[in-house]
Image (cartoon, rainbow, N blue to C red; front, side, top):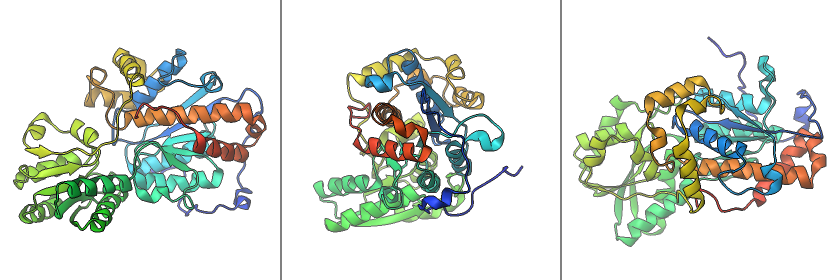
Length: 399
């Protein structure tokens, strides 16, 4: 069934006169609830549980991270919508920014959108967020292109960039004097960007980085296994001993299974987002590789990490739907990871998601007390929130 509507035109127009044809309900100037939206997809079925975790702690008066009084006293409306592929994620992002009023529902447009997950989705949704002055905070979109503040002035993030991973990869290779290495990567925006950053940083240090690309479906971001065997065989036949690895959690299991079939399990692999990738591998696949050297972001900072883990382990599946997780997604979590809350919460950029929620609350609390006049106009409010977010600093769950 076709979608009721879809935005197809490029929306990188920043001229305010382009808004003349759009009508929105006025924002009340007093007692304004913070409309906090989330846009992500099935790269990780567990991320909605982290939103529920943050909501549970906030509603109980003990947020996961310390909040200033203005943020701690906010009235927050949590907008959490299901998306199961990249196209749906873009659609959800547009809907969150424009408001579900366009679909006959009562939900208001969000003030801040946390997301998206896939860099391709973040780029497209950011075009609309720029136009309507709605800040976006990415917690897992890594592509370096999103750092361009001319193109994406309302996009910021709490996760690392592919440029950072490229520098880290080159530094490791330089340390061990590896002057010729390989790089296995999926052809998403983030995967390609990770390889390019590694190649550029490696070249600056006199290191040749030989790339092997693996095509993925442009909508689902899933692997085309039948077309990957040839690329993995070439990598195996190259004779190279060390390889960078840039695959998402959706494609990493297939990639490493093929690597094992090509007898590459005795090579040294240096995957990005190692903690997240490791979490989706089967015990059999984990045990079949002789060497992996992880390149990951810091995942936790005591004492906040201790409290976050405590609340996480107290959660139950039955709490998720009352805390705003759509029933369909609760069923997915039950199916894919029934023991989720017995595990550590520090994987899949969960800490970075908590940091994004915290930053958004601090910024809205700051604007509502220091610039209350901004609450009466959506564009003015969005601009004020962006400026506040640029200046927000705190000790985060991610370190």
